[in-house]
Structure formats: structure tokens, C-alpha cells
Length: 229
Image 1: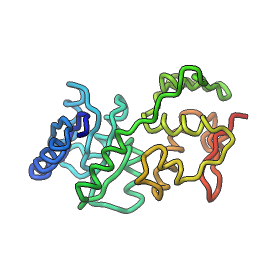
Image 2: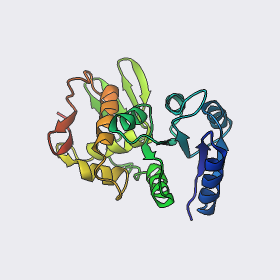
Image 3: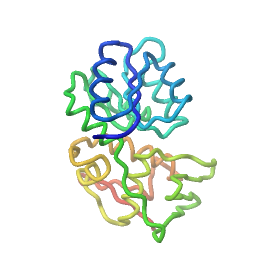
Image 4: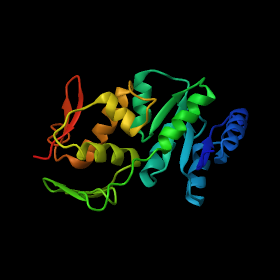
């Protein structure tokens, strides 16, 4: 049985009802909301581990709700939509989602993605490097906080997992597939656009000039490399 608190956000009652029943049977604590506005209220009211967020809703759409949630919370977010084009996936990930699932989806697929979104890499041992300094930017790996010249910024859980994995292997080119399977799980490997979005987000937070990165480097046709020099 799984554990965790999940909020389903969808304006269709039948979808909310089916998802509630399925997720509750898997052991999750489940609640639901009919709109982005109601989802934000639920988040303010109590702790959640994951939000299953539909893109197309009246009022505040899923993308805007995702942006507002991510501005203040590290909760895992999976966007749900009928659109499967790569630009739509990138919009969802740019808004702060951890993952993306396209309707219609099978329940085993959704459950696998929920497990992946809730998956967290082990915290590095206290004896390891806890603070990394990169040209005036300080990264505290223990607190997942970054201090740069403009102030303090927060890493989302997936951003932290990705940076932590790369930083633990400095100077080593890590292939796309290995990064995806290490961070998201064994069912992933071909979602290269996920890495592009998350690396770009990290560059904005840790690179002095994100357009010309010095530390999070792209290895063409291979993957990414963390450069400490």
C-alpha cells in the first residue's frame, strides 16, 4: 500500500470520483477541488504531498494554478491534459510541474507517475559536501537553498535531486537516460525535454549568466556534466 496525501483538481465530478476511489484503494489520503482557486485554498489549509492538476478548467487554469502553487510550495505536481505535443509538456514543466500525463491514461500509468513524482533521492550523508560555492553563488545541499547576488531562492524537490546527482559526480558526463531513471525512476528514459526544462531552471538559479553556463554544462548527444572549475 502507498502512503501520501493527494489533492485531485478537476472540474469534472466523474473524474474526481473515479480518481478518489482508485487512489484511496491504493492507500493514499485523497481530497479534491473543482478549480485552481479552490486548490490554492486547500494548500493553504493543510499539508499535501502531491497535486494532480488538470490543465483545462474554468476560471484559473491549471498552468496558472501550477505557477502560484510552485511560488510558495514544494509539493509534487502532476499536470493532466488532453494535449500531448512537446510544447504543451514544456509549458507545464516550465510552470513548475514535476511530471505530465496525457488523457486518456491508464490507471497503472497514473499510479507509476504518482510514485515517480513522490520519489525522493536519499539525503546526502552529513559527512559529504553540504555547501557548494560557485562564483558568488552558494548552494546549501542540506537545506535546498541557493543564495546568489539577488538574494535567496528555493530549489524544488526535483531540481534539488537533479543538482545533487550531478554535483555528486563532478566532471562526469551523465547520459540523459541515466539521469531520468535516477531522478524520476526506472520507467523513464526518453523524456529528454524534462531534463532541458529542469536544467534551464537550475541555470537561472545558480549560473551568473544562464545563457552562457559555466557549471551545468550540456554534453551534446550525451547528457549533462557538472563543472566545479
